[in-house]
Length: 590
Image (cartoon, rainbow, N blue to C red):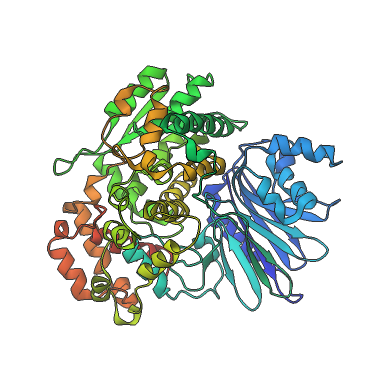
C-alpha cells in the first residue's frame, strides 16, 4: 500500500535528511497519493502513501503519537485491525484515526515486540522511540511486503525498495558472489539476507530488528512453518481436509476485502484466481472488476488463457477486462519493467504483471491475486517424484536449479567462482526440523523462500510500479499453517493441488478445475528471436557489460549461437536470465 524508508544515525549524529527525501522520490510510484517526512534527532523517516484504508489526512504518515513518544512508517494492510482496535480501546487507548497504522503503533506500545504475533496481514513497518532513539522494525511472516537495509559505521538505512537505497553514495556497488550463484542457479531466487549487491541486505520474513543509537542491531524470529499435524488431524480424510480448507480460505478472501476503496481480482483463468472470484460471489461481490492479459502465440505455444477466464467472468457476471498485449507494446515496456524491479527477476511473468497492472490501475487501487496456491498445495511438477524420495535434495535440485555448478563456473568470471552456494543452502534448509518427508521439505522451502523471492516479489514490484496494491489470500498465515499440516498425498496427487481442487468443486465450474495447469505465458521471452534477441545481444555485448565482467564472454557467445538450445529445466531462457541482470545493473547505474 505504500513505500517506507528511513535512516537511524549512530552515536549522536544528526540525521542526513537529503538522501531520505531522495529515497521517497525514487518510490513515488509505490505511493502516489502523498509524501511524508519526520525528523527527530538522529532518526529520519520517509513515506509514500497509497490511500487504501482511512483515506483522511488523520492517517497520514509518518504517523507521530506524541503522547506515546512513538513514530511509525508502515507499508501493508492489517486485516484484523478493527478487532485489535477494540481490544486496545478496552485497555484504555484512545484513537485519533480510523485506519490500521495507528493500531500498529498502539499495539506495539501495549505488547512490545510480541505485537507482530497478533497481526493478520502483510506488513513492513518501523517504529521509532522519541526519547531513546531506538527503532523496532518488522516484516510479515511470508515476506509479502519487502524491506531492504544497509548498515555502515555511521547509520542504519532501510527502504521498501533496493534501488531507493542507492540514493546513498557510500553504499558499495560490488556484486555479492553468493547472491550471483543463487541468481544463476536457484532460478533467480536470492534468499535473504543476501541481495545481488554485497552492501545491501534484505530482511528475512517472520523476523524483527531492533536498532539502537549505539549501532547495535538485534534480529529475532517470531514465526516458523511446521508441517506436523495434530493427533486429531492425523485421523482426517480428504473430505475433512477439503471442508476445513474452504472454511479457512473463505476467511482469507473476506479479510482481504478490508478497504475503503473497491477491490478487484487478477483473473488468469486458473483454479486459484477463479476460486477467489467464486468465493467473492458467495460474499455478494458479483459485480467485481476482473482482469486478464494475453500475449501473441510463438512457436505454437499459446500466449493467452482467455478461454478459461471468460468462463468465470460469464458465470459470475463480473465486470471483466481482457487486456491484449500487442507486440509493439511488450518490447518498449521491457526497460520500464526491469527498472521497476527491486532486484533482477528472471520470470517472464514480470512483463505480464507489469502491463496488466498498468491497465488495472486505471480502474481500481486494490486487487486480490492467486499467488501462493502452487507452493502451499503442491501444484508444481517436481513434487510427485519426491513422494518416494528419501531426502529429496537431489530430486529437488534436478528439477528446480537452472544449471549445475560446473556450468555456473563456465558462465561467470573466475573472480565469482567459489563454493556451490545454492546446493549448500538447499541442504541446510532440508536439514531443519519441522518437516519429516522429502516432499514436505520441498514444500517448505518453496513456501518460505522461493515464493517470497519470486512470485510474491514479482507481484509486489509490478503492481506497486503503478500504485496498485495486490493482496494474496492464499498467503493468509493461518491458511498457510493449516495447509502445511495436510498430508502431502492429498496435495501432490492427481496432478497436484488435489485437496484444493476437491474443495473448489462445490464453488466454481469444473471446466477450470480439471484444465491443464497454466500461467502468464510470454513465449517471446523464451524463444528469443528478432528484436527480442537483438535486445538481449546488445545488452550482453554492451560496453557496460564488458566493464562489469560478470559473465565469461565465451559463454555468452556460445549461448547466443543457439538461444533455443539453452532453456532451463523450468522452461526459462538462460540468455534472458543474464540479460535481465545486466540491464538491471545498467539502469541502476551500477
